[in-house]
Amino acid sequence: MSSLVASKYTVVDKIPLGRRIEEIKKEKGGYYSTAAMSRRIGFSEQTFRDMLKARREIYTFELEKIAKDLKLTAGRILQEDSYKQHMGLDSLLNGNERTKTMLQQALVVSSELVEKAVGSTERGFALHNLARVMYLQRQYDDAHTTWLKALEYAKKIHQEFDDKRLLKVVSANLMLTYAIRKEYSNIGDFLCAVEEMFAEDHDKLGLAQHTRMLVQMERGDCESARKHSYLALEHFEQTENDKQIGHALINVAHFEYRLGNYSASSRSLSDAIKKVVQYEDILVVVVKEYVKSLVKIQEYDTALKVVEKYESVSREYPDYWGKLQIMKTLLTDDPSFADRISNDSELSLNVRSLACKCLMDFYTKRDDAENALKYYKKGRTYASSPTEFYEEEDY
Image (cartoon, rainbow, N blue to C red; front, top):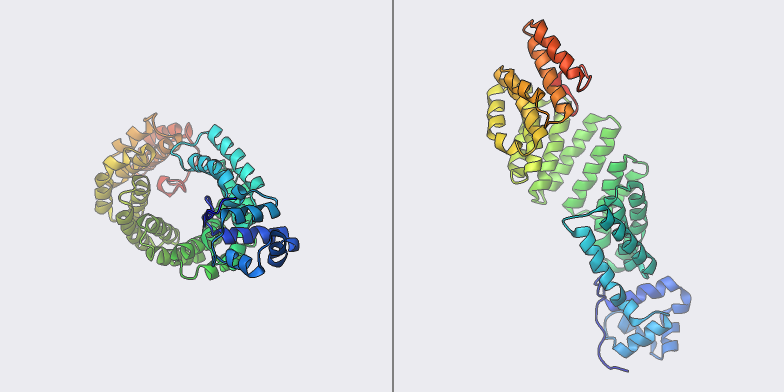
């Protein structure tokens, strides 16, 4: 037998070896109590306890004895036998490209790792990774159910070892799947637990308030949803994460707009632009919403300057560019902008329909029945909503 010292930590989950052994012992039941095991493998009970609490090193030959009694291999305890699978799974999940074939392969690997897992930490993280794959495959119900299973292990290792790593990621992902599935039964207790466990973590507290906002929005309580959007913003501002703060400002603006507080909406969106200026895909959304709010408070000159300032950026996102061009017709009293959009086959049918509604409104207000009818008929080929174009929910 070798007298070399065994690794102090497992190679995948990076937890102390003694803790790993303790988790497996507890999972296997009373036959594997510290006293019973120490007698079988020839250690004094105190020596074994010192090993488990990392007060004493564990030698390789000692780990072999422990593993044999647990009916495992030393490599299984150290997670050496699953390291390559984990590395492969990480590559599949974190790569820049995820094809259907790759995700199917990831599902096979993550399922195998769940079957192989022993001990609370390994089981919890294995379930978490399986849920991640399900989520990427848009199997949101399965992902949610699997994260709920992982949550039980996360709570256990937090309680027993004061380790919040799994609890943090699982809680965040569950808030996401609750929102996507719009199934909020029993969410109140879950959110209260999250807020209690992460009382100093502004990121998690912000996510909890964001989820409460979505619950109220789903219930049609816009006023309560606005309140929670502001509370989420307060927490996210403490994280100094500009992208997250920008999203929170967008949510605040959304509810202010829906409640008719257009000045407050425009102020939030003006602040949001500063936070997301480097994230162009978010920026174009903010700009479009900002212009809408400015129109509502009749700040037409400012709105036109915003459209023109971000015109080159918005061109990279054709539908958003198209919507801003439609607004340009309203701001300049020039129908040519919307007309070009109505004829642009590169744009979605929805945007072309909005352009036709804009032009129908434009010519109706000028008693030009011929052109109003022309764009009415043209718009009918794209869509059939009679509402004013810039009040469309998806505008």
